[in-house]
Length: 252
Image 1 (cartoon, rainbow, N blue to C red):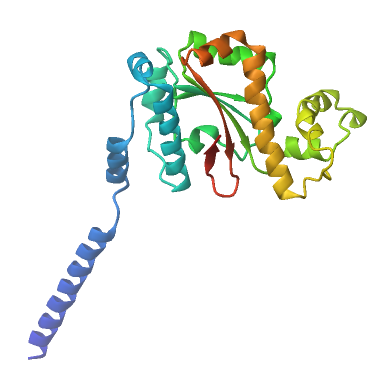
Image 2: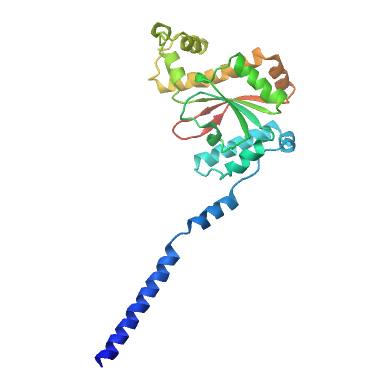
């Protein structure tokens, strides 16, 4: 009798262990399987010359807006960068060029949910234009076929804040930085009756907006090529501001 009970208990214990083992196997994720699934859903292609040629400036702007919505919703496209890098080595056909501030908190490609070969990105503190930046824009559009130029400022811009506060960069030995801040000064000169302080967020954001508009106007003024392409509706030159807290880009 005792022997029979021992046999039955052993059988029950074995069944329990087998069941637990099966359950554990069901809950353990397979890293290889997950990686394969991710690769299957990743974007592997890059923009082609035909796709670039067939897009209008308005369509490109709408794609930028949709991409930014993906960024805000934390729903960025999964990309196979290795494959895209391989394809991009053959040639590039970006849809737009974005002039952004150098601020490390503004990841331009991510902000618009874009990958390798999608856009040109130029960066300079305060998103101002200079000869090299405008020359790069001429290359991006007249030579490489991009149809949109976006001048993108952002909230909490350090360069704009220092310009507002009239920081004496030259007195600290930074003459080149002073020259850069001086490029923003004309926007401030239009508000001489207002106390200039970056602590006034509403005023600072207004200056950020106006600095973007000034850069857009300056680009058209200093580049007859870009101005004619804009007037002929071959390209669009627009402004935008990135909100540091929300991730939202507001196009102007």
